[in-house]
Image 1 (cartoon, rainbow, N blue to C red):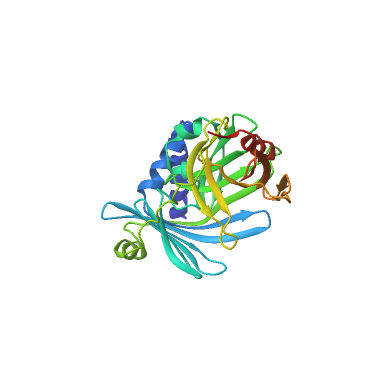
Image 2 (tube, rainbow, N blue to C red):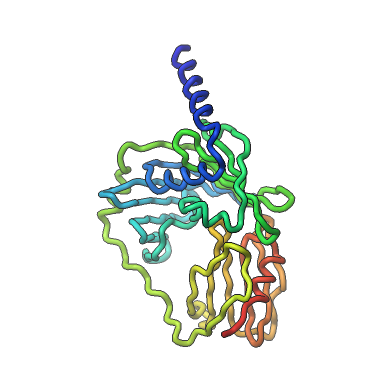
Amino acid sequence: MRVFLLALLFISCSSLANEDIPAKAWLDKMSHALQEQQFKASIIQLQSNHIRPLVYIHGIVEDKPVAFLEYLNGPPKNAVRVEDQVTFIEHDQPPYSVRSPRIQGVWPMALAASPERLAQGYEFVLGGRSRIAGRPGQMIRLIAKDDYRYDAQVWVDMATYLPLRFDIVNRDKQLLEQMMVIELIELDEPASILVEAYKQEWPPVMNLAERNQAQNWQFNWLPQGFEMLVKDNHRLIGSQEQVEYIALSDGLTNVSVYVTLAKESPMPEELVTRNGLSMVTEVVGNAEVVVVGKMPAESLQKIARSLVLQ
């Protein structure tokens, strides 16, 4: 009974200590925690009726950040990060590496970056508190400043400041996607798998596709806070069709743009799945533009129509 009462007292004191922290400060603390703390998180990803369990481990080995992601269902699929190199290991193809500061597919990359990036497109508002994975969490609402994107909300562990849950919700407050921790273990030293990953000789980073024949596509308009992250030019496997690929992001929402020669049989103008992922197609001159992202279809259409050749 005494131990139980002491635990309750600790939680109460922690809550009082965090009472006056504004929303942006919570996000700042979460960003630092994701970069500096050593931990193992068991997570479930919910998308519509699809559930994907995964394990994410993060630590510091010889002053270098190292992380490991494992998908627990389906064919073996893992990712390893050592500093800014991420290597993907899948059962049906050789390992390959890319340059990235985070492993895609866990928490949005902006959660480990400065909140100033997100402030361009979102307002930060304190929400309520709830218990997740046995730990008290503070909810921060990320409210879109415009109608071009969806809202999000993140629950931050009140003890470690690590994220416990992340939701994307549409304009009708319907849940589109959720990442939720079901177990969080703090580590005093890097996990052995991270130490071994640090010592491993991974494949060199893939070179970006040559752009000698690529055209200079630019956007006349993008929603506030969106930036162009990647532009490359390659041929589709099988058809060998030339495709130009452009990746856009505001830190929370990722958008993919594909540009190719217009076909005689055009694709559907709009396709929306149940988890909020939309696709639109537009014809710009003699090119067909396909834009895919977890945004309202009207936003993707406006992005596609703003594409110009310079």
